[in-house]
Image (cartoon, rainbow, N blue to C red; front, side):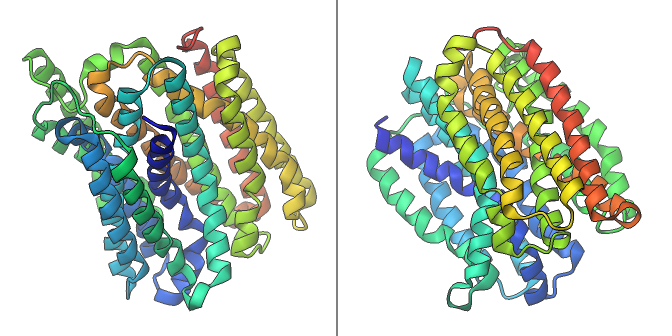
Length: 457
């Protein structure tokens, strides 16, 4: 794959990642314009995330079967159209439906990126490409909130919040035209049929976990939320049983259990879950605290994350060279740097509240970005390092599903902790408590880094 082809697939990967977070800073404006209310606003966020996470593995399997370039092109086109539907939504529930559809199309698009990289690169080129993908994944999350704040504040042609969705349309069109010319077609040498029972059970498992956790608090924890949480362990157990039976019978399950016997994938995914939980929760809590507590406008709230974006990207670029020399110690060091940034941010908020400026946040945000940029791209590289090319699509889908499910769980768990502490502690102390909870999660990821392979391919 040419450098322009790599740039094209990374651009395609950035779109769904940005859209997971871009809506955070636009929620107050959406509420005022569409009279949505808290429960519907949660659905605008959760509908996208749940559909996205639920269908990612299926998207990877379809790319293995039908061709990854073909699915990438279909996904880009559908993502652009559903983004247009979001931007033109006349009411709140239409926006929710369009966001669910947008999440489903993102799940078709994203797995093809990693699978194409795995299938078309080797050695140092693959290591660099995966590091760039990891950098794109992390930076896009922060850029989403920066870009969202800029677009809402600019109010282009009176578009307000609608611009955060409409901006995807020309970008998706440009990426589609580039992909037609620059992205090679690849597919699995042994394509198999879609695992219907496995797909249905995985969807049921993720919906039973993610939907009540993301929507239950705002809805007042109704009976359905508890029933779904009760269903979750049974659906998960049934999924494991069905997948094991399918693999023993010689069929190809949606997620082959043998994947988790690959040491790098097992240890890498174990660490990715808590890392993603902490990262997703951090992005949500900071967006809320800056706007409701420090009274930042949408643009200032987004701009406060710019130092994190810059240092994350720079650290991800340095990752391949650091890994060749220091191996897994890069991840260990990155986790400790991230912990330092969280402590610095908590101290800054506690000491300076309510007069903390964007510039005052910059040092701790920059340190956080360095730490996270040293962890996520290297972790993705480790997960994929021993994966057979024939399983590139499903392996990439499993990894991204793990990441996206972790992000959604982070919004649900750390977000719920923060919002539940608000009435008794106030915004400052609730934010500090959430940051300290994330610090505990980071210490867990640091311990799990000791299970990673010493040398990284």
